[in-house]
Amino acid sequence: MSRKRAPQKQAAPEGQVAPRSLAALNRLISSSSPMVPGGTRAVLGEGPPRPDIAFVGEQPGDQEDLQGKPFVGPAGKLLNRALEEAGIDRRQSYVTNAVKHFKFEPRGKRRMHSKPTAGEVKHYRWWLEQELDFVKPRLTVALGATAALALAGKPLSVSANRGPIVLNGRPAFITIHPSFLLRIPEEDRAAAWKAFVADLKQAKKIGEHHAAA
Ligand code: URA
Image 1 (cartoon, helix red, strand yellow):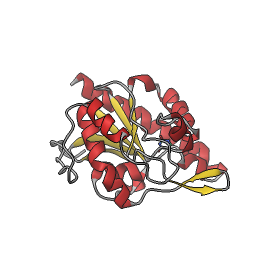
Image 2 (tube, rainbow, N blue to C red; image 1 turned 120 degrees about the vertical axis):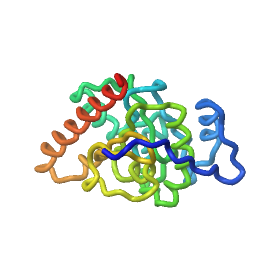
Image 3 (cartoon, rainbow, N blue to C red; image 1 turned 45 degrees about the vertical axis):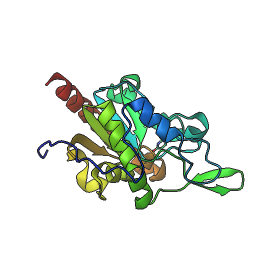
Image 4 (tube, rainbow, N blue to C red; image 1 turned 60 degrees about the horizontal axis):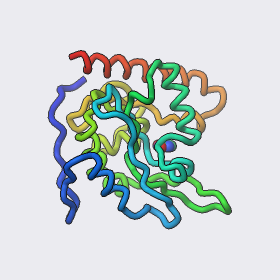
């Protein structure tokens, strides 16, 4: 792992004053407009301050948008199962997203997930950095390429960078997004699942190690 350094402060977006607390930041995020018409709300991160691990996903999905909580839909169910298998208590971890609003395309009655662009990820990045500065996780786990992009401030391949890494001065760990497991062929799933759980177990050890240091 490369040397740890202080997170590089990003300049505040024009006209925005840095909030003084996580609650103030969350009020700011909650008062922002959805990415696309029909989005319900901004989905805030949840979990205790100073956790061993913060998990950063891509963006809320349909269920998250409706329920106002991160990772409560199909990807969240997979994440919960993997966390359980890795011995990580989700309630002791912080869970959030790089992008705070659900971006989707209406298809009939359904709202189909639409990947945020690099510009959209950048737009939310200042909030994510502020959020992590307040939450102070010992280790930040990027779930997938969008989270890695948001945390690094530049595109990073998940396969080439999977594992422990320092992202913008933060001790971090890159792994797959759980929804990847839903997209790959059935015959590849067992191995991908095993590798994902192994990553989470390694992340747990690192988080505990930093907590004890
Ligand atoms: N749900 C989330 O909250 N985030 C994701 O990245 C995917 C589903």
